Length: 596
Image (tube, rainbow, N blue to C red; front, top):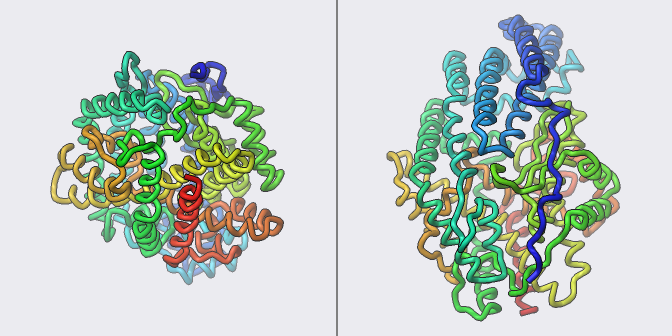
């Protein structure tokens, strides 16, 4: 067996270029700047509606108002990002959690003062806004942001109710904080070891079946002990959402997420239908083949991501992963590699796993006035190399659209996942190109499993959330009832070749998206299948593709997903578009079947 992967030399970020610590006086200075910009905006209250009959005056007011709004947003985002970034690596330190919560409350109080602004914009008619944009070209650049603001127009409440929701949001968000801290403090007894949540999840990909089983059972016991708390967090936040959705007259629990993503409910329904239709030909068939390769009729759930080779899986050193990612990005276009390189040159990546650091991975954009920061727990496995590519894809995207400014750079989740998943795909192509026949089988298995985890599993998560929120409408849902829904929806997606052993009913509890971002998960499937369409276009004409793709990323949130994909000849409103993406995943299963 190879020596354990060493993590003590992996990079940790430095947040000095945000702030030097909790007591940095610049934090109060920036909060003061945010308040000053907001106060200047408040002085314009009532002026926007009053000027609706005068296009030139309205246009000038809109331009000034949005500039002030963005100025306040930049200051608040910078302070909030610092608190979130620092706390995410110190979930075992109550001082950081308190600091984060206090800043969130202070920021909410400041932001609440400008609540009137978007409400007042939405009192103005479309024709009046368009006349203002024509009369004041400086204001016209904000048209995409105004369009996004107006998506929520039918669901807005009175100014007093909107203010009340903002004022109480810090208290409500503490339920999410409790969930975070509960999971960050989770340890599982695995054999003779005590492992954190990320370490336990990583152990479930161990080549040794006994070690995988120990990890799975240890995690089940650790989660079971915490499900009363985690279920209470989920139930409370779901009820809060239910009340707000009812007041806002959303037709269903996912509607607010669709608006935030700027996608049609019909498009998401088409995506879900295409994936569910492919359960049998993709996930069910693949796991049946994997069981056969492993000499089994049925796999235990802890074997789902097991390597096919029982030898210790190959590990990739940090420098090796870095080179692979940069070379892959360079194959697309030098600018992508050059942009990613900066994150290695500067201390902007935190990759080292350690006690108190939360699980997961992300790239935080902070604001357009700052560079992004990349967060992950690097364990040296193939999936970690792909995760590095994924998060750096986000970072490149965030960097390319930053010149637009924070408001226009803000990208809906469905398009925000495009660059990240594309980055993964580029690295995988490089891995596969240099593989032997034996290695190719393992890489294909890993790629198929990544596809299942990103598409099939996330749509199963979406279906689980849909069932859970429907049940929550009838009253609090017990941990046992939540577990039963989880087993049913996951069983449907995984198929008969995967046995959901006792204890698996608690595994819903570590999926933090259910608490922090309801109905977020379908965006991963949306992004993955969308990228499969884009990568097919790249294969057809790589020279023409690169500038079009760069333009898509640089456009940030200024275009809808339909507008962004039109230059590539792709129409994501059609079920056939999503079905074609699933067919690509099915062809990988075909290739795997031919090898085994």
